[in-house]
Amino acid sequence: MPNNQIYEILDKFNSYHDRLRFTVEHNYDDTMNFLDVNLRILESLIRFDNYRKPTNSGCYLNYKSNPLEHKKGLIIGQLDRILFLAHPEYHKKILSL
Image (cartoon, rainbow, N blue to C red; front, side):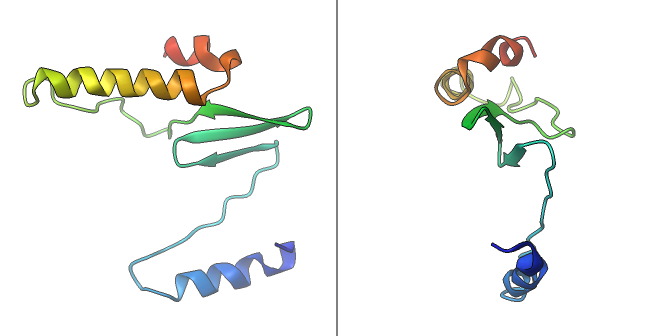
């Protein structure tokens, strides 16, 4: 979209419902965060990395309140997201967190 129409379109989106609020994020370093993915443009290629908000606590489940299958599923799901979504260049960094 043209840069001079960004806020006009944002106002239009935000006018649809009073409980839905959209925001605009400006990036100047060839990266963009979307949901839990960081898109990086390097050498005309897009590489995916996992993104965690600064407020992320890393807590997903209370250990005592869920069946073992849920805990296993959470770990396997997180590992799948790392291995199948993130570029291999970022695997070691992500897994060391």
